[in-house]
Image (cartoon, rainbow, N blue to C red; front, top):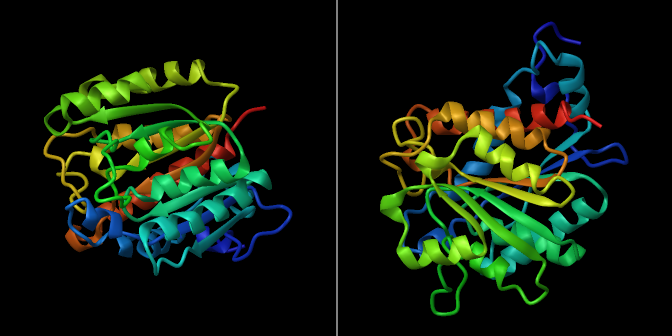
Length: 296
């Protein structure tokens, strides 16, 4: 083993019977364009994974971290060539296969249309799930001319005919970016909290009520303030700190009820010196470390 080992030295190219984590890339930003946003997020998965591989396992928890990494396969890119809906179905099948093999799928988006494809994995696997979203926006808009987009994934999940989305819970909302009706709808389906209300305690309190249930976590990078995450589809002039963001990613990994995870809306076209790409990679690193330290 190298005296300066990196994640690339441990990650496996293919899934095996020992695989605990599967990493997928969903390079879609069609939904962002349909929603009137700026494209570019489709370039994020490969760049984030490339940066992730350069990081080192945690020195204090090297044995546990490196062991999990040796049981992690990635990156598998979901080919996005057709409509958003067709691409989401393909992602859903990949997620379902991972869930039914008891692996924890990690999905790197892409726009937030990624999350409905993510949810479709639960639908295909017939697994009820609670959705926990860290986001500046509720993303519960209706379809646009019958088309799915980056602002509609959680309304689609909640209204899916199988009824497997048991609640929708969003933390980190920017009060200047959320309409009253969208806030009411989101709150009626679970919980909805503004960015000044989010804390590690508020998240852990929520998990205390859902410890024996499946939880799908999604983190939208635009929840982080623009100064610390400039490369996003929709920049946030206020937002939460990157310190809290990374702490949340670590805690999500530690929670045994978290059965899948996605990271969305990183837009390399607007990044500064790879700042947001590096933060995204560190987000995944923290989540993986948390999984490695799960108890029980």
